[in-house]
Image (cartoon, rainbow, N blue to C red; front, side, top):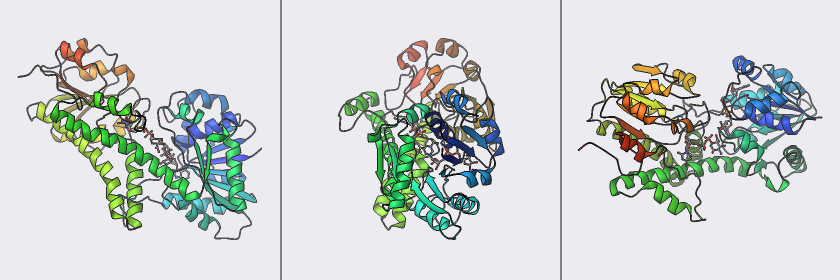
Length: 457
Ligand code: NAD
Ligand code: UGA
């Protein structure tokens, strides 16, 4: 039996440890966090995150070989393997503000491990997404004292996406493990590979050097985001020329060399990682005196900001350049469906821009209303939160679809139209609704990268 500890009970730490616990019943796994509230939620019937299928897995293993605790020191003392899955935010101050990683939490964890470890050999696994060479920095801290513990730091980035975490963890495209090439490094990588091999085929477990592993994680996210910015840039051109982005996306995606994934046009990508990781990648390039490479990746984020702004400007322009006292119903606040996560959601800047125009906003979302309240807590304006999408739309001038929850496709749009102010508008930030049907009901429909369907002259 191996004692496994995970520091950080968030969107990654919770689900990944639940999955390891499920497939490795002989091992004991403890997940610790400095947030007592989060740990209490993990120990309750209402988990701190909404993720399809997660509760069932947690129910199966919690109290059997998976435990949630706030006692970080005791957890470290007993652990043979320590996953570090804390948040790695962008620095907001000093050198590299807005671009580099804020490494203070990472260093705090390293020092806590150093002070509390009691086993002879401890493997520290970098699960968080960090800039290249962070594992080496942690190893230097851990090996700075002769306390009789041998630490081996390896990189094992996580590739799960929210909303599909359980599916992704059950059947990952690959497991990436980066370690040092010496005997101790390879042994640590093999130990971790054996853990994953309980359910992941060996050929999907990829062993690399530490820095390749760290860089691959940053670069994977940058590549995914780049595809979205690329397709979103073409929505602007489609709107000018009359081409249809769905047709263009399908046509290019059928080329096997391009592939069809991540070509869905949107109001802009969101989530806690794309912007952050691209910023970190660009900053890394700047640090290594590669300004052209840095600017190239920065442009992926700039294009995303442009797309969000473009969506807002279309709303303003099409409603006679005034939104004052008009009610805007926001369908979806989460950064994507099947999650309650609102970190870096495009809904936030859109709501801010609408409120700056003195519009009234009425937000609905099946899972993200609590987080929406937190995001907008410090912002003044006429803001309403409605569980019921029909109530959110009552008396509204416009519907803004920001998150493509499946249930929004199934709403009774005739009923919604009847209760709205006319002329009624729909701005579909995901090209998700049946535009022709909405137009036939009487809506003026503004999709992305497609011809507008308007009853107005
Ligand atoms: P999160 O904010 O949901 O969770 C991080 C947790 O770490 C928080 O609960 C926080 O209280 C805790 N924490 C911070 N400092 C601590 C300390 N010193 N001791 C104990 N606990 C501490 O973050 P997340 O979304 O799970 O992301 C974690 C890492 O994984 C990030 O580096 C992120 O880039 C990466 N990642 C995230 C996802 C995702 O889908 N969210 C996917 C892949 C990788
Ligand atoms: C993303 C990656 O997909 C994961 O592999 C990675 O582990 C994770 O980031 C991370 O490091 O945090 P996630 O942010 O959870 O996962 O969700 P995605 O499905 O990638 O969506 C990100 C954003 O892009 C969402 O706002 C989504 O709506 C948007 N998107 C996605 C599009 O606009 N178009 C698409 O075609 C796909």
